[in-house]
View (cartoon, rainbow, N blue to C red):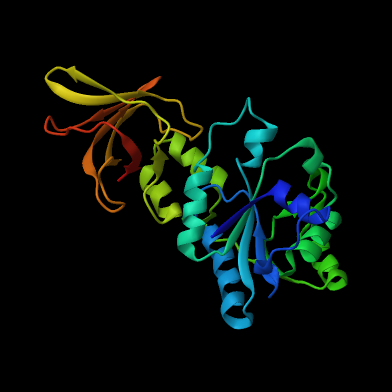
Length: 278
């Protein structure tokens, strides 16, 4: 999967670099934070892959380095469901051909919705866009899905409105999953994600500790991701030397400032790549 920064697209718009050959056949795109990604997002991606199969359009996503709420309301924001690296890996494994990653800024936020869509049509050769009914874009989010449908007639692309996906009779959303993590409702979280909730631990520093004859790895909670409530959880620790599918089943204690991972005495490595809640 090819990853572009929004600055790369600006270089294309300014004529400093050519439009990539990747876009020549036409692209099928979905735009969003994709925090999770969850089973609702999968329906959007499936719509893109359907266009690839039927019309040979190149499937791509336009996303943000962090969910927009994290940029706009940092004091109230509780944390990301997934890191950018996790999302990009998900897109790649799903079969998405490219992703455009935006670092949200005041300049980007001032782009009008129609202008943004014009960019996608002219410079990314967008022929198809898939979004949910509640999607909006542009300055102050003023451009909703009905306006996008109108613009599609003028600009020459097709709009697909994907219905919401329900779990226990309510719409699945990143904000709902985030709250479920905070409430430690991990079974519900895993159902809405269709996989275990995972903390990306690649940037954490772990230290060994012996406490009451138990061996632990301990790290400060220095992640952008949301944590469940303080308590003990059954987890799969994906550690250095393990393959992607193997790990160490154990327990983790979430404390106010630390993560405490119980490990067998025989474990000789201390680098934890990820922790999955099982």
